[in-house]
Image (cartoon, rainbow, N blue to C red; front, side, top):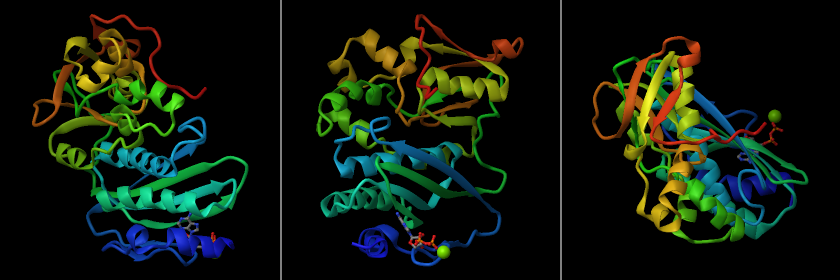
Length: 305
Ligand code: ADP
Ligand code: MG
């Protein structure tokens, strides 16, 4: 099958690459064209997923697709942005009709759920499967949630349970096609899009938790030049995770494991988050970091290098 046929057959489908109110031109020309409404700003973010680094080589193509789009959309959630479309660069080792069919079904499922159609991309052939997704979203001009607005006196909240995805890792590494409930959390870390948009009116800073709570909150601390005190007893752990491992291990997953894609944010009051700690004045830039009351841990989160 030729490249163009492949694109038309698999990526140019009504269920995946429909035209929404913002897209005046989608797949099929040299560029896609997006109309940005006045008083709105475009938020962009890109993620690359590598076979055997970000997902097991033999994972189901459907799961690879849902995970890839979810983790990328999560960055829009963290800014309070509303998704408007995504582009996909994919490098395929070979042409396999069944694989592509299932892959694009997974993409369609998440695209429809979050009203975010595929608007363009690039298709190449190469030895390893590599998936790069860029998401495009809209926020009100000047209103996006950043990492830099936390203030002493604010409280720290998260949007939901932590550690499930890290807890799933040994399951999906052993059995890439597992349907275990934790594996489901790993494969479909549904981005907190609506939650993020609701935060825009009152949160002072926000980040999505991709590398573990400690490391990601440290980013807020550095950008905002504040310190944080987190109470380990307040960190929400799911029953599924606690059924899978010890409480000590679950806490370690929550603090330092990656892939949760919940939001962590600061605000001076709570509307629907889970309170986990306090923002304090940082004495100096060395002090602009998180401390966890009652926990002892060394490794602080996922890093590539
Ligand atoms: P060009 O040669 O002008 O770069 P391409 O041949 O790469 O164009 O792509 C043709 C059309 O198909 C473009 O509109 C491009 O955005 C789209 N496209 C290519 N690959 C993908 C993909 N993986 N997903 C979505 N759209 C794609
Ligand atoms: Mg061209």
